[in-house]
Length: 400
Ligand code: AMP
Ligand code: MG
Image 1: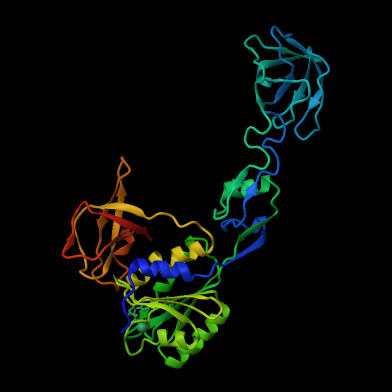
Image 2: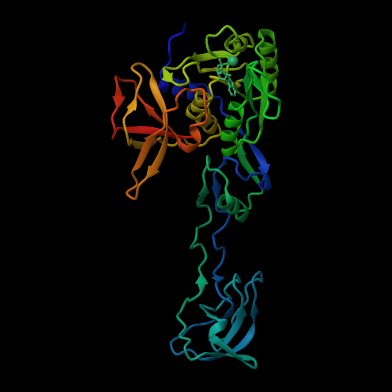
Protein backbone atom coordinates (compact mmCIF):
# COMPACT_ATOMS: atom_id res chain seq x y z
CA UNK A 1 0.00 0.00 0.00
CA UNK A 2 1.40 3.38 -1.00
CA UNK A 3 2.20 6.17 1.45
CA UNK A 4 -0.53 8.75 1.97
CA UNK A 5 0.10 12.11 0.37
CA UNK A 6 -0.80 15.14 2.51
CA UNK A 7 -3.57 17.50 1.41
CA UNK A 8 -1.14 20.37 0.80
CA UNK A 9 1.29 18.10 -1.07
CA UNK A 10 -1.53 16.78 -3.25
CA UNK A 11 -2.56 20.33 -4.08
CA UNK A 12 1.04 21.33 -4.88
CA UNK A 13 1.70 18.20 -6.97
CA UNK A 14 -1.41 18.82 -9.06
CA UNK A 15 -0.43 22.46 -9.61
CA UNK A 16 3.07 21.43 -10.60
CA UNK A 17 1.95 18.74 -13.09
CA UNK A 18 -1.18 20.32 -14.63
CA UNK A 19 -0.43 21.25 -18.22
CA UNK A 20 -1.71 24.74 -19.15
CA UNK A 21 -4.55 24.57 -21.68
CA UNK A 22 -3.01 27.21 -23.95
CA UNK A 23 -4.89 29.95 -25.73
CA UNK A 24 -6.79 30.52 -28.97
CA UNK A 25 -8.23 33.45 -30.94
CA UNK A 26 -12.03 33.50 -31.08
CA UNK A 27 -14.47 35.99 -32.62
CA UNK A 28 -15.82 38.46 -30.07
CA UNK A 29 -19.32 36.97 -30.07
CA UNK A 30 -17.95 33.60 -28.97
CA UNK A 31 -15.86 35.02 -26.16
CA UNK A 32 -18.45 35.60 -23.44
CA UNK A 33 -17.76 33.59 -20.28
CA UNK A 34 -14.29 32.62 -21.51
CA UNK A 35 -11.02 33.46 -19.75
CA UNK A 36 -9.05 36.31 -21.30
CA UNK A 37 -5.44 35.48 -22.11
CA UNK A 38 -4.25 38.84 -23.42
CA UNK A 39 -3.87 42.35 -22.06
CA UNK A 40 -6.28 44.88 -23.56
CA UNK A 41 -5.31 48.55 -23.75
CA UNK A 42 -7.42 51.55 -24.70
CA UNK A 43 -7.47 51.86 -28.49
CA UNK A 44 -8.00 55.62 -28.16
CA UNK A 45 -8.83 58.18 -25.49
CA UNK A 46 -12.20 57.65 -23.80
CA UNK A 47 -14.08 59.70 -24.69
CA UNK A 48 -12.13 60.19 -27.92
CA UNK A 49 -13.19 63.86 -28.17
CA UNK A 50 -14.80 66.52 -25.96
CA UNK A 51 -18.29 65.06 -25.93
CA UNK A 52 -21.64 66.83 -25.56
CA UNK A 53 -23.64 65.37 -22.64
CA UNK A 54 -27.07 66.90 -23.27
CA UNK A 55 -29.44 67.62 -26.11
CA UNK A 56 -29.62 71.41 -26.55
CA UNK A 57 -27.17 73.98 -27.84
CA UNK A 58 -23.44 74.58 -27.62
CA UNK A 59 -22.03 78.08 -27.39
CA UNK A 60 -19.16 80.14 -25.98
CA UNK A 61 -19.45 81.08 -22.35
CA UNK A 62 -18.52 84.54 -21.12
CA UNK A 63 -19.32 86.74 -18.14
CA UNK A 64 -22.64 88.42 -18.96
CA UNK A 65 -23.03 86.38 -22.15
CA UNK A 66 -26.01 87.17 -24.42
CA UNK A 67 -29.32 85.49 -23.53
CA UNK A 68 -30.43 85.40 -27.17
CA UNK A 69 -28.31 83.20 -29.44
CA UNK A 70 -28.71 82.86 -33.18
CA UNK A 71 -28.77 79.26 -34.47
CA UNK A 72 -25.79 78.98 -36.81
CA UNK A 73 -26.11 75.27 -37.59
CA UNK A 74 -26.16 71.88 -35.98
CA UNK A 75 -23.63 69.44 -34.57
CA UNK A 76 -25.35 66.06 -34.34
CA UNK A 77 -23.81 62.87 -32.87
CA UNK A 78 -21.57 61.27 -35.47
CA UNK A 79 -20.87 64.46 -37.46
CA UNK A 80 -17.33 65.77 -37.93
CA UNK A 81 -16.47 68.83 -35.85
CA UNK A 82 -18.31 72.03 -36.74
CA UNK A 83 -17.33 75.58 -35.72
CA UNK A 84 -19.13 78.33 -33.85
CA UNK A 85 -18.94 81.52 -35.95
CA UNK A 86 -19.36 84.07 -33.12
CA UNK A 87 -20.10 84.52 -29.43
CA UNK A 88 -23.72 85.52 -30.01
CA UNK A 89 -24.45 82.33 -31.97
CA UNK A 90 -25.04 78.70 -31.03
CA UNK A 91 -25.14 75.30 -32.69
CA UNK A 92 -27.86 72.78 -32.00
CA UNK A 93 -26.29 69.67 -30.45
CA UNK A 94 -27.29 66.16 -29.41
CA UNK A 95 -25.90 63.92 -26.69
CA UNK A 96 -22.80 62.14 -27.93
CA UNK A 97 -21.87 64.85 -30.47
CA UNK A 98 -18.39 66.38 -30.68
CA UNK A 99 -18.17 69.72 -28.95
CA UNK A 100 -17.99 72.22 -31.84
CA UNK A 101 -14.80 74.27 -32.13
CA UNK A 102 -15.12 77.60 -30.32
CA UNK A 103 -17.66 76.25 -27.78
CA UNK A 104 -17.15 75.60 -24.09
CA UNK A 105 -20.68 75.47 -22.77
CA UNK A 106 -23.69 73.23 -23.44
CA UNK A 107 -27.16 74.40 -22.48
CA UNK A 108 -29.87 71.73 -22.19
CA UNK A 109 -33.02 72.07 -24.27
CA UNK A 110 -35.12 72.23 -21.07
CA UNK A 111 -33.56 75.65 -20.28
CA UNK A 112 -34.24 77.13 -23.74
CA UNK A 113 -37.09 78.60 -25.69
CA UNK A 114 -37.07 78.72 -29.49
CA UNK A 115 -37.86 82.10 -31.04
CA UNK A 116 -37.65 82.03 -34.84
CA UNK A 117 -34.01 81.54 -35.78
CA UNK A 118 -32.81 82.10 -32.19
CA UNK A 119 -32.79 80.39 -28.83
CA UNK A 120 -33.62 82.38 -25.70
CA UNK A 121 -32.15 81.31 -22.37
CA UNK A 122 -34.92 80.83 -19.81
CA UNK A 123 -34.86 83.06 -16.72
CA UNK A 124 -33.57 80.35 -14.38
CA UNK A 125 -30.75 79.37 -16.77
CA UNK A 126 -27.36 80.37 -15.27
CA UNK A 127 -24.76 78.72 -17.54
CA UNK A 128 -21.31 77.81 -16.20
CA UNK A 129 -18.18 77.53 -18.33
CA UNK A 130 -17.54 73.92 -19.30
CA UNK A 131 -20.94 72.61 -18.27
CA UNK A 132 -22.33 69.36 -19.75
CA UNK A 133 -19.08 68.58 -21.53
CA UNK A 134 -17.43 65.18 -21.05
CA UNK A 135 -13.80 66.08 -21.75
CA UNK A 136 -11.58 63.93 -23.95
CA UNK A 137 -9.61 61.19 -22.12
CA UNK A 138 -11.25 61.81 -18.73
CA UNK A 139 -12.42 58.17 -18.54
CA UNK A 140 -9.06 56.84 -19.68
CA UNK A 141 -6.23 57.79 -21.98
CA UNK A 142 -5.17 55.89 -25.09
CA UNK A 143 -2.92 52.97 -24.14
CA UNK A 144 -4.20 52.57 -20.55
CA UNK A 145 -4.51 48.98 -19.38
CA UNK A 146 -8.19 48.02 -19.36
CA UNK A 147 -8.24 44.22 -19.05
CA UNK A 148 -5.62 41.74 -17.87
CA UNK A 149 -5.08 38.07 -18.64
CA UNK A 150 -7.03 35.76 -16.33
CA UNK A 151 -10.24 37.80 -16.24
CA UNK A 152 -13.52 36.09 -17.08
CA UNK A 153 -15.36 37.91 -19.87
CA UNK A 154 -18.69 39.14 -18.50
CA UNK A 155 -20.89 41.95 -19.88
CA UNK A 156 -18.61 44.84 -18.85
CA UNK A 157 -15.46 43.16 -20.18
CA UNK A 158 -17.22 42.28 -23.44
CA UNK A 159 -18.31 45.91 -23.80
CA UNK A 160 -14.72 47.11 -23.34
CA UNK A 161 -13.48 44.69 -25.99
CA UNK A 162 -16.10 45.99 -28.42
CA UNK A 163 -15.42 49.62 -27.54
CA UNK A 164 -11.73 49.15 -28.22
CA UNK A 165 -11.91 47.39 -31.55
CA UNK A 166 -11.01 43.89 -30.35
CA UNK A 167 -12.89 41.78 -32.91
CA UNK A 168 -10.87 38.64 -32.16
CA UNK A 169 -9.98 37.81 -28.60
CA UNK A 170 -7.28 35.59 -27.20
CA UNK A 171 -8.92 33.32 -24.63
CA UNK A 172 -7.95 30.15 -22.78
CA UNK A 173 -8.62 26.97 -24.71
CA UNK A 174 -11.67 25.22 -23.31
CA UNK A 175 -10.51 21.69 -22.47
CA UNK A 176 -12.54 18.70 -23.52
CA UNK A 177 -13.46 16.93 -20.28
CA UNK A 178 -14.85 13.41 -19.79
CA UNK A 179 -16.60 12.58 -16.54
CA UNK A 180 -16.45 8.84 -16.21
CA UNK A 181 -18.50 6.76 -13.78
CA UNK A 182 -17.32 3.25 -13.09
CA UNK A 183 -19.40 0.46 -11.59
CA UNK A 184 -21.74 -2.38 -12.59
CA UNK A 185 -24.33 -1.14 -10.09
CA UNK A 186 -24.80 2.25 -11.78
CA UNK A 187 -27.71 3.05 -14.08
CA UNK A 188 -28.76 6.15 -15.95
CA UNK A 189 -31.27 8.66 -14.55
CA UNK A 190 -34.05 7.46 -16.85
CA UNK A 191 -33.36 3.71 -16.79
CA UNK A 192 -35.43 1.23 -14.75
CA UNK A 193 -33.75 0.52 -11.42
CA UNK A 194 -33.03 -3.19 -10.94
CA UNK A 195 -32.19 -5.01 -7.74
CA UNK A 196 -28.78 -3.99 -6.40
CA UNK A 197 -28.59 -0.98 -8.66
CA UNK A 198 -28.39 2.75 -7.96
CA UNK A 199 -28.56 5.72 -10.26
CA UNK A 200 -25.41 7.53 -11.31
CA UNK A 201 -25.25 10.91 -9.62
CA UNK A 202 -21.58 11.79 -9.06
CA UNK A 203 -21.18 12.59 -12.72
CA UNK A 204 -24.16 14.95 -12.69
CA UNK A 205 -22.77 16.71 -9.60
CA UNK A 206 -19.31 17.14 -11.12
CA UNK A 207 -20.66 18.24 -14.48
CA UNK A 208 -22.86 20.82 -12.74
CA UNK A 209 -19.82 22.14 -10.89
CA UNK A 210 -17.85 22.46 -14.11
CA UNK A 211 -20.68 24.03 -16.08
CA UNK A 212 -21.12 26.67 -13.41
CA UNK A 213 -17.46 27.55 -14.00
CA UNK A 214 -18.02 27.92 -17.74
CA UNK A 215 -16.65 24.55 -18.88
CA UNK A 216 -18.91 23.69 -21.79
CA UNK A 217 -17.15 20.73 -23.41
CA UNK A 218 -18.08 18.06 -20.89
CA UNK A 219 -19.08 14.49 -21.78
CA UNK A 220 -20.43 11.83 -19.43
CA UNK A 221 -19.35 8.22 -19.83
CA UNK A 222 -19.91 4.96 -17.97
CA UNK A 223 -17.55 2.01 -17.67
CA UNK A 224 -18.57 -1.37 -16.27
CA UNK A 225 -16.45 -3.27 -13.78
CA UNK A 226 -14.45 -5.36 -16.21
CA UNK A 227 -10.70 -5.22 -16.42
CA UNK A 228 -10.38 -5.36 -20.20
CA UNK A 229 -13.31 -3.02 -20.80
CA UNK A 230 -11.92 -0.49 -18.33
CA UNK A 231 -8.57 -0.51 -20.07
CA UNK A 232 -10.08 -0.22 -23.54
CA UNK A 233 -12.51 2.58 -22.69
CA UNK A 234 -9.82 4.54 -20.86
CA UNK A 235 -7.58 4.33 -23.95
CA UNK A 236 -10.42 5.68 -26.10
CA UNK A 237 -11.23 8.47 -23.67
CA UNK A 238 -7.58 9.50 -23.44
CA UNK A 239 -7.57 9.88 -27.22
CA UNK A 240 -10.60 12.13 -27.28
CA UNK A 241 -10.24 14.33 -24.18
CA UNK A 242 -7.81 16.64 -22.40
CA UNK A 243 -9.08 15.89 -18.91
CA UNK A 244 -10.59 12.73 -17.39
CA UNK A 245 -12.51 12.91 -14.15
CA UNK A 246 -13.25 9.36 -13.12
CA UNK A 247 -15.26 8.35 -10.12
CA UNK A 248 -15.18 4.98 -8.41
CA UNK A 249 -12.95 1.99 -8.83
CA UNK A 250 -9.89 3.54 -7.17
CA UNK A 251 -10.11 1.86 -3.77
CA UNK A 252 -8.57 -1.47 -2.83
CA UNK A 253 -11.55 -3.66 -3.77
CA UNK A 254 -11.21 -6.65 -6.09
CA UNK A 255 -13.19 -4.79 -8.79
CA UNK A 256 -11.26 -1.51 -8.54
CA UNK A 257 -9.56 -1.65 -11.91
CA UNK A 258 -9.01 2.06 -12.51
CA UNK A 259 -5.41 2.64 -11.26
CA UNK A 260 -4.03 -0.40 -13.10
CA UNK A 261 -5.94 0.45 -16.29
CA UNK A 262 -4.64 4.02 -16.20
CA UNK A 263 -1.07 2.82 -15.71
CA UNK A 264 -1.49 0.33 -18.58
CA UNK A 265 -2.51 3.20 -20.89
CA UNK A 266 0.57 5.21 -20.07
CA UNK A 267 -0.95 7.55 -17.52
CA UNK A 268 1.85 8.39 -15.11
CA UNK A 269 0.73 8.28 -11.49
CA UNK A 270 1.58 11.45 -9.57
CA UNK A 271 -0.03 10.25 -6.35
CA UNK A 272 -2.59 7.79 -5.05
CA UNK A 273 -4.33 8.22 -1.68
CA UNK A 274 -4.45 11.41 0.32
CA UNK A 275 -4.37 11.72 4.13
CA UNK A 276 -7.93 13.03 4.29
CA UNK A 277 -11.46 11.96 5.18
CA UNK A 278 -13.50 11.61 3.11
CA UNK A 279 -11.75 11.09 -0.20
CA UNK A 280 -8.69 9.08 0.85
CA UNK A 281 -8.56 6.87 -2.30
CA UNK A 282 -8.11 9.78 -4.74
CA UNK A 283 -5.63 9.20 -7.58
CA UNK A 284 -4.03 11.77 -9.90
CA UNK A 285 -1.83 11.33 -12.93
CA UNK A 286 -0.78 12.73 -16.30
CA UNK A 287 -1.51 10.98 -19.59
CA UNK A 288 0.83 10.52 -22.56
CA UNK A 289 -0.40 13.71 -24.29
CA UNK A 290 -0.38 15.67 -21.03
CA UNK A 291 -4.00 14.81 -20.22
CA UNK A 292 -4.87 15.49 -16.58
CA UNK A 293 -6.49 12.45 -14.98
CA UNK A 294 -8.33 12.84 -11.69
CA UNK A 295 -9.65 9.54 -10.37
CA UNK A 296 -12.07 10.47 -7.62
CA UNK A 297 -13.48 8.06 -5.09
CA UNK A 298 -16.93 6.66 -5.89
CA UNK A 299 -18.69 7.69 -2.72
CA UNK A 300 -20.76 10.71 -3.67
CA UNK A 301 -19.66 13.09 -0.89
CA UNK A 302 -16.02 12.06 -1.37
CA UNK A 303 -16.28 12.58 -5.12
CA UNK A 304 -17.75 16.05 -4.73
CA UNK A 305 -15.30 17.06 -2.00
CA UNK A 306 -12.31 15.95 -4.09
CA UNK A 307 -13.65 17.61 -7.23
CA UNK A 308 -14.15 20.85 -5.29
CA UNK A 309 -10.88 20.76 -3.38
CA UNK A 310 -8.58 19.59 -6.19
CA UNK A 311 -10.04 19.29 -9.68
CA UNK A 312 -11.96 22.56 -10.01
CA UNK A 313 -9.15 24.87 -8.80
CA UNK A 314 -6.63 23.02 -10.97
CA UNK A 315 -8.83 23.36 -14.07
CA UNK A 316 -9.40 27.04 -13.38
CA UNK A 317 -5.68 27.68 -12.83
CA UNK A 318 -4.83 25.82 -16.05
CA UNK A 319 -7.02 28.34 -17.88
CA UNK A 320 -4.93 31.15 -16.42
CA UNK A 321 -7.27 32.29 -13.66
CA UNK A 322 -5.26 33.53 -10.66
CA UNK A 323 -5.72 31.22 -7.67
CA UNK A 324 -7.84 33.01 -5.07
CA UNK A 325 -6.96 32.95 -1.38
CA UNK A 326 -9.08 30.49 0.61
CA UNK A 327 -12.04 31.76 2.57
CA UNK A 328 -11.96 31.62 6.37
CA UNK A 329 -14.84 30.80 8.69
CA UNK A 330 -15.35 30.48 12.44
CA UNK A 331 -16.81 27.23 13.76
CA UNK A 332 -20.15 27.76 15.45
CA UNK A 333 -19.96 24.43 17.29
CA UNK A 334 -17.38 21.75 18.02
CA UNK A 335 -16.63 19.14 15.38
CA UNK A 336 -15.10 15.66 15.60
CA UNK A 337 -11.73 15.52 13.89
CA UNK A 338 -9.58 12.61 12.81
CA UNK A 339 -6.34 11.83 14.69
CA UNK A 340 -4.31 11.24 11.52
CA UNK A 341 -6.31 12.55 8.56
CA UNK A 342 -7.45 16.02 7.51
CA UNK A 343 -11.23 16.22 7.96
CA UNK A 344 -13.54 17.79 5.39
CA UNK A 345 -16.86 18.61 7.05
CA UNK A 346 -19.84 19.94 5.08
CA UNK A 347 -21.18 23.17 6.57
CA UNK A 348 -23.64 25.96 6.18
CA UNK A 349 -22.12 29.43 6.34
CA UNK A 350 -23.67 32.69 7.39
CA UNK A 351 -21.92 36.04 7.32
CA UNK A 352 -22.96 38.59 9.97
CA UNK A 353 -23.12 42.38 9.62
CA UNK A 354 -19.48 42.74 10.72
CA UNK A 355 -18.40 40.44 7.87
CA UNK A 356 -17.54 37.46 10.09
CA UNK A 357 -18.57 34.13 8.56
CA UNK A 358 -19.87 31.52 10.99
CA UNK A 359 -19.84 27.90 9.90
CA UNK A 360 -22.57 25.52 11.04
CA UNK A 361 -21.21 22.00 10.51
CA UNK A 362 -23.55 19.43 8.95
CA UNK A 363 -21.50 16.25 9.25
CA UNK A 364 -22.71 13.64 6.78
CA UNK A 365 -23.44 10.29 8.39
CA UNK A 366 -21.43 8.53 5.71
CA UNK A 367 -19.54 9.70 2.66
CA UNK A 368 -22.06 7.78 0.59
CA UNK A 369 -24.99 10.13 0.51
CA UNK A 370 -25.74 13.49 -1.09
CA UNK A 371 -28.99 14.00 0.87
CA UNK A 372 -27.57 16.20 3.63
CA UNK A 373 -25.59 18.42 1.24
CA UNK A 374 -28.25 20.68 -0.29
CA UNK A 375 -28.51 22.73 2.91
CA UNK A 376 -24.76 23.29 2.92
CA UNK A 377 -22.59 25.81 1.08
CA UNK A 378 -19.36 23.82 1.04
CA UNK A 379 -17.03 22.19 3.53
CA UNK A 380 -14.60 23.14 6.26
CA UNK A 381 -11.07 21.78 6.21
CA UNK A 382 -9.74 20.80 9.64
CA UNK A 383 -6.23 19.51 10.34
CA UNK A 384 -5.81 16.15 12.07
CA UNK A 385 -5.80 16.14 15.85
CA UNK A 386 -7.11 14.47 18.96
CA UNK A 387 -10.80 14.72 19.89
CA UNK A 388 -12.68 17.74 18.63
CA UNK A 389 -12.06 21.13 17.05
CA UNK A 390 -13.77 23.50 19.53
CA UNK A 391 -16.35 26.16 18.69
CA UNK A 392 -14.54 29.36 17.71
CA UNK A 393 -11.87 27.54 15.68
CA UNK A 394 -10.93 29.45 12.53
CA UNK A 395 -10.90 27.12 9.52
CA UNK A 396 -10.58 27.34 5.76
CA UNK A 397 -13.79 26.88 3.82
CA UNK A 398 -14.36 25.64 0.28
CA UNK A 399 -17.62 26.41 -1.53
CA UNK A 400 -19.28 23.71 -3.61
P1 AMP B 1 -16.23 2.52 -5.52
O1 AMP B 1 -15.24 3.58 -5.23
O2 AMP B 1 -16.29 2.15 -6.96
O3 AMP B 1 -16.04 1.35 -4.62
O4 AMP B 1 -17.65 3.15 -5.17
C1 AMP B 1 -17.93 3.54 -3.83
C2 AMP B 1 -19.42 3.76 -3.68
O5 AMP B 1 -19.82 4.88 -4.48
C3 AMP B 1 -20.28 2.62 -4.12
O6 AMP B 1 -21.34 2.49 -3.19
C4 AMP B 1 -20.80 3.04 -5.46
O7 AMP B 1 -22.03 2.47 -5.77
C5 AMP B 1 -20.90 4.54 -5.32
N1 AMP B 1 -20.73 5.21 -6.61
C6 AMP B 1 -19.71 5.02 -7.46
N2 AMP B 1 -19.85 5.77 -8.55
C7 AMP B 1 -20.99 6.46 -8.39
C8 AMP B 1 -21.72 7.41 -9.18
N3 AMP B 1 -21.27 7.82 -10.38
N4 AMP B 1 -22.86 7.93 -8.69
C9 AMP B 1 -23.31 7.54 -7.48
N5 AMP B 1 -22.69 6.65 -6.69
C10 AMP B 1 -21.56 6.10 -7.14
MG1 MG C 1 -17.09 0.62 -7.97
